[in-house]
Image: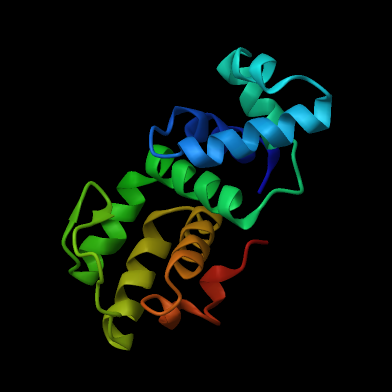
Length: 152
């Protein structure tokens, strides 16, 4: 992810009220990296914490997943909603309502991918599809191997 998007993801992450566990982990990672006390990291302004976190390259999968989720929830809800609408999946502002959605059939998925790819920048679509695959490979397995996953 380019540094500006990593910073945007980190900013969204620090504002995410559902990320308390991952935020504690991020504070510890940053504190070790810059040799500050965790309490000092917590008192840094949001933009400084975001820049420090965006500069970390060795983070856990759990923290990375939360960063990606926070980014999409903050910056990509219209795209998320458009994709779910194209699939006919009930959602609330881009969040799927059903706890265990059924995997979309191939034809519906093809149409939804084409719709999204025509309406949004390719890198945004690719990042979203990777996030879906990472979160739920069973439901979104039909995205595997698609050219839309290329992040070039």
